[in-house]
Image (cartoon, rainbow, N blue to C red; front, side, top):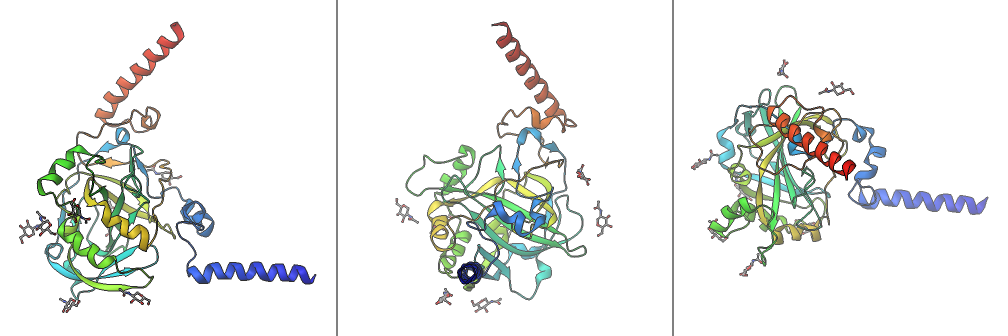
Length: 327
Ligand SMILES: *[C@@H]1O[C@H](CO)[C@@H](O)[C@H](O)[C@H]1NC(C)=O
Ligand SMILES: *[C@@H]1O[C@H](CO)[C@@H](O)[C@H](O)[C@H]1NC(C)=O
Ligand SMILES: *[C@@H]1O[C@H](CO)[C@@H](O)[C@H](O)[C@H]1NC(C)=O
Ligand SMILES: *[C@@H]1O[C@H](CO)[C@@H](O)[C@H](O)[C@H]1NC(C)=O
Ligand SMILES: *[C@@H]1O[C@H](CO)[C@@H](O)[C@H](O)[C@H]1NC(C)=O
Ligand SMILES: *[C@@H]1O[C@H](CO)[C@@H](O)[C@H](O)[C@H]1NC(C)=O
Ligand SMILES: *[C@@H]1O[C@H](CO)[C@@H](O)[C@H](O)[C@H]1NC(C)=O
């Protein structure tokens, strides 16, 4: 009896210690994404983020371009805070109304809330969303909130990291040509960000830095994917409008590497099931070579390009089948 009590007390201490030392109910290791559903059942929902964007299965839809208020193109003070999971950039100026956007197929006016990064253990992992099963080195989320409905919309950017020492690890040759014109991998605005962020090594460390949101987002905002999802961290709240821009923002791997050692080795959630959701693209022709995933497209045939694609895929499967049965 005494022994049982001791064991019980020991376990209790262990459990409370886990909670109190980390001060959190979830993280990216022992309380990682696989168990978030036990912590908050919303994380088991049917409209969760991120997802794997299967480019062959997206539907074309034209959306009005995003319209950003002038504040996006001005330099403001942002508070950067290490929240234990990532660094959160919060606008601390006195004119939040200057950071509002409309358009982009979103309903109403959205106000900037915060931005933060997700990354992984090396340059081939870290993005939360994937494109045809491929991960990028990281992902930046600019979180916005509808000023009336308070529903969230996230503008997401893939981070492509390129090692300072080698050019052989470039994932997308198309973007690489732009990069080498300037030979500066990490843009000046992001260099400002990293220069101060690297010292926020302890949870609740914070600092102030002058940043320009438009410069952080870059100028490649024309092509994007859109779908309905959720927060990618607990409580995994759904009804979030997702915009994933197609062109990644490029960084030197060395910048991301600092975060791997100071904040978290990695802090991304893997793709969640799409279920019956549709992913839209706002550009007519997909240039990223689609992986021929035949079965994913069956429910999404209301797109001419996809139909042609399917038709070809159909034939291929048929011919392969004949070939194998005959010989
Ligand atoms: C930001 O302002 C500069 C001039 O200060 C201008 O050249 C540029 O086009 C603006 N960018 C956006 C996204 O409005
Ligand atoms: C921005 O922050 C700095 C301190 O980091 C401060 O000196 C400056 O006045 C702030 N600017 C604005 C516009 O609040
Ligand atoms: C847009 O938002 C308004 C409320 O701001 C709502 O009444 C309307 O139904 C919404 N439209 C769509 C298409 O969601
Ligand atoms: C990148 O490499 C160049 C020369 O190879 C070096 O001068 C520079 O300091 C390096 N940058 C970083 C951030 O390590
Ligand atoms: C490249 O980086 C250097 C040092 O950070 C900076 O002085 C220069 O303006 C940058 N060039 C471009 C094109 O961004
Ligand atoms: C981070 O927090 C620690 C502990 O509170 C403190 O010693 C350190 O100076 C802080 N660093 C910054 C950059 O705020
Ligand atoms: C997906 O299925 C759910 C029920 O499981 C339904 O409420 C929702 O409207 C469906 N969404 C679409 C886009 O069909």
